[in-house]
Length: 294
Image (cartoon, rainbow, N blue to C red; front, side, top):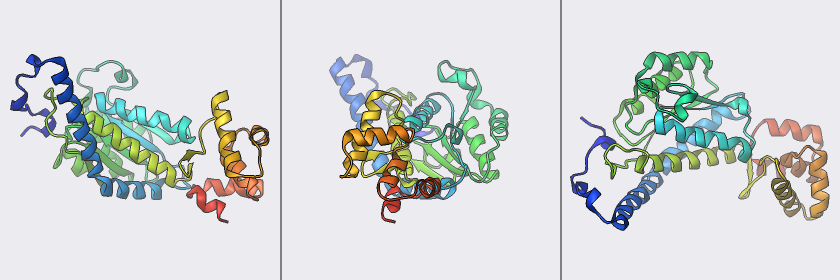
């Protein structure tokens, strides 16, 4: 039986004969429904966030994205943004890519069917019980991705599945199956469309909530944003002076400059923490507001 994402919707047989505006309407309406499919999974996503926090908080555990083709490209896009946005260490990020890094830009024939390679990559990355592995596959049956989750779970890692296919092999392999039922694509089998939109939205929401739980957000501001240019240094200074009434923007700038642009450390010191105690407290990765209350 074909997974939902591979089915041909008989109502759309005349898609190519429609006017461009009608094609666009069908495509965008299907992607709007994809977002709804993610919203419907909020309880399951929240449960997965809680489980991931247990593994990652105060540990050396890594967030690892796994998949093939379009799915892993979406996963990598989510992962790489965690570094500049939330200051998540590169050493705590990992990718298991069918066909290797070259497959991010070109198609590697047969890579998604290579179960042996999936197991080899898990072993080479030394995945263990501190790690969180997210397998992404719209169809839910990609051999490489299923192999990654099975091997990772056997190694003790927390495993999540992001798929648009319920009752799939990927769901069976994961402790937390996150299923967005996007159904048949407007272009049959083209999972870069609705399924891809659902994957992007789900991962975006999951990782943002996870980073917030690990102390990298205060209010609705990014307190670990990397100050790699003038704009972001000014943003850090605005956040610090906005949180600490006694600090002017220029004073906040000077303080952050002296601290190597560690905004969280600046916030704690400005609120009365000893610098060394503040550094140690940050390593525990609790929600940041809890530290301000102490």
